[in-house]
Amino acid sequence: IIFNQGNAPDREALIVADASSRTDGSPAVYDIPVVGASFAQGEALAQPGATAFVEVLPAETRTDYNVIAEVRGRDRDNVVMAGAHLDSVTVGPGINDNGSGSAALLETALSMASLKPHNTLRFAWWAAEEQGLVGSTSYVEKQPQEELDRIALYMNYDMVASPNYVPMVYDSDESTWDASATIPAGSTAIEDLYESFYTKVGVPYDDAEYSGRSDYQAFINAGIPSGGLFTGAEVLKNERQAEIWGGVAGEQFDPCYHLACDAFENQALDALDVNSDLIAFAMLTFAFSTESVNG
Ligand code: PHE
Ligand code: ZN
Ligand code: ZN
Ligand code: ZN
Image 1 (cartoon, rainbow, N blue to C red):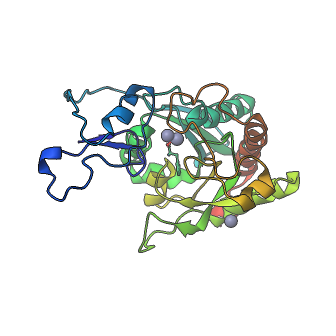
Image 2: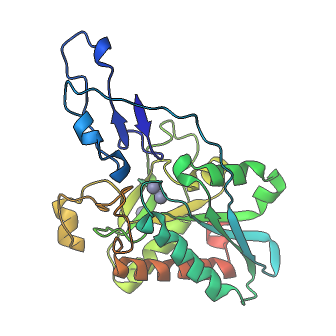
């Protein structure tokens, strides 16, 4: 029996093996990273020899909505797009994941609402990312090719204020989702702009890899130049990173990743501050011109 939450199955699984099918004497219950309060008994279930009573309910079907807002530019056929997922996992409120990206993007959208930019700016707050990138995938799949052709680029903001953060820029050279590398992973021009911003404000940055675990994926699949920011999830900060950015080596970038404690306190306000500036800066830069990205 595998309980799975979100789109990181390797991490967020509670596995209770069927003891009756065990033939080699190995423990019937495996290493269990419990996801949160609602799985609190998972620890007890992990004891070899324990009996688990599991009630499996039929899957529930719900409707959820993407929220899309647009600032029309003089050029309606050249759209600069940015998105953040608005949903959280069910066990917690999801303040860093992804209230952080959603709020930063909202602030940028509000501050640009009365502009008349050259290019058209489109903001997306995605539904059901945690259920498997559902909202963004459905959005891209529903656009006719001529609409997709109008989208100059897409920027993704998922977890931009992790408490034990490293500011990371999605890096085109680092991709784990397309082993055969048949589709180029992301835009180096977007990456370069982000890196120039961090350099300008004196904030060191690192690379993030395109793992296919967030809403940029549908855009990359559609051949739209993409980029994004990330400040870390379940991976542990190493010594070198702690020397550069402070924080705690040996601890997760976000110790409350997908837990009930991803609540209001679970955000680094200094990271949120600089990343909000970056999000606005990138939007404004591309509002004038996307030539660096599209040639
Ligand atoms: N998309 C993940 C989530 O919402 C966040 C994440 C992105 C984690 C990339 C790791 C790598 O939970
Ligand atoms: Zn998540
Ligand atoms: Zn997320
Ligand atoms: Zn880079």
